[in-house]
Length: 330
Image 1 (cartoon, one colour):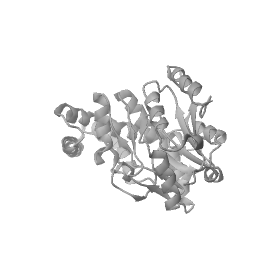
Image 2 (cartoon, rainbow, N blue to C red):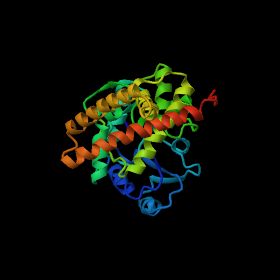
Image 3 (cartoon, helix red, strand yellow):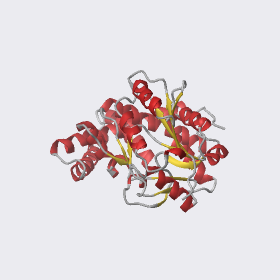
Image 4 (tube, rainbow, N blue to C red):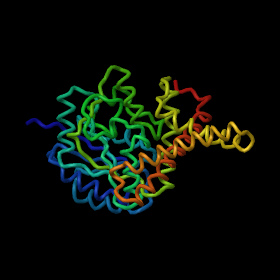
């Protein structure tokens, strides 16, 4: 078999809890090390991340460390691409563990399908209680709208994948990652691929495990930013928002407006009570139906996580509407 040089790019920032697990999975890949380099792009970490990485850099010459003074992810990815010597780019995340054939399968399917980007479904797991509940939310259509890239069994063309594998020259030709979109860079890139007649392909043969947030404050910030920067992406591409984007925004607006009106108007109070009763009924149904929330306590906590995700994303979306109303991305 003829192997091509592969550059693995991993943006990192304060990843002391995950970076060792990630690197060990990369070192266990069945792809020949002579044809692989690992580029870690650090956004000026202040914890033990660099101390841990340095041990690997000293031991393995194909592991490289690049500084990202701008700190945001698309800048890290572009720095990695510019420093890459490989013909193929595998974009990875430090919060994940990769099966030993992840890289080889990614390259295989990129070539076999003729796609411009290939990836695997986002399999999400937790190690601690809150993280396990958040992982359960990722599998919930009530939380995230049932996107195909969270479906462990789906194979075919999709709008977007997490991370992805590309030809390096293709990324350069398409303009790499947009550094104006620090929290929606993958969606933006995949949108441009599809818009230009390209193909984004997902297969469950490409396997990895992602470890989500382990605290509610971090989860709130994450989904607030997702909502906020989603507006920027929508405005940049002048494409309509999907229902899954608009529902949390509408929910937040309804809660605030009719919550206030319900103090003064009986009809508003009845409508508010009816809608909220429906919302909590759906929340209870999907929380207690969720097979990944295996205990009663986890199912109860999932009720809170669902609400937090919806409110955070909705608030972020509204903040984005006001922030980007006068900004032109052309």
